[in-house]
Length: 308
Image 1: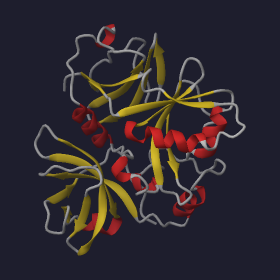
Image 2: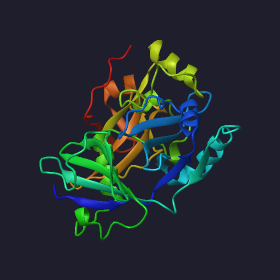
Image 3: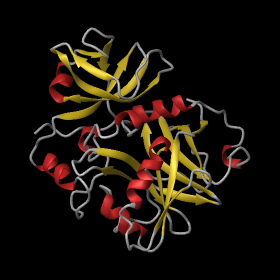
Image 4: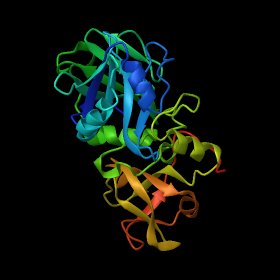
């Protein structure tokens, strides 16, 4: 699979500055941030007091010590407004950095040497290459995925100059194949983190202190009440985030929601869908209605815990 570079205008970046920026984020997000190894990125979620996800983030440190936060661009303004409510007397600021950061995805064949100078990064590793920050993400099968964030366009940046450009659908497909779902406008407050497998992906720390929704998230984990998970699905018809999924065994109500999807170059569509476990076990799934187009279960690149 040839390498390609993809500009990601749907990705928004926020910056948290100041000596207590980490304290603010640690208190609001599902992730441990006070004991955070250097040169690493982390996933996290922002939840309501009921444990429902308002947004998800990829977080990394910039050279000046600021914490950068990548999220769906359409959710940036309401998320920024919500987090600013909790600054109070903390010595920190939160800013919309969309005008100062360009975001790109780099897809490479995982069987070939990487294009970035300095050698291949480990998964979740970060490295500054001049003004460009490189963040290695979990692979899709056969594809190395790296996020590149810079203050300006990367057209003339030597490591990727001349690479063919791909569409955002190619990046979305790689995310689907990596098994990582994200919150967008159509799925705000639809899921607790475990429904998106976020504890499996390392985006939830169960040993840190309190954050909004922590009691619900912890209770779901420790009382064995996880009844819904995200699965890979395939279908012949177009899928969109927020589309309902139905099971033929219970046609009167949806059994899940599409989290994200993209067209496949092999034909049809691939997606991630949050499903009731019993519905996923039956695998008689349909998109949009009990009589809608059939969906087939695919495979995730990681194992899910056994149901409690």
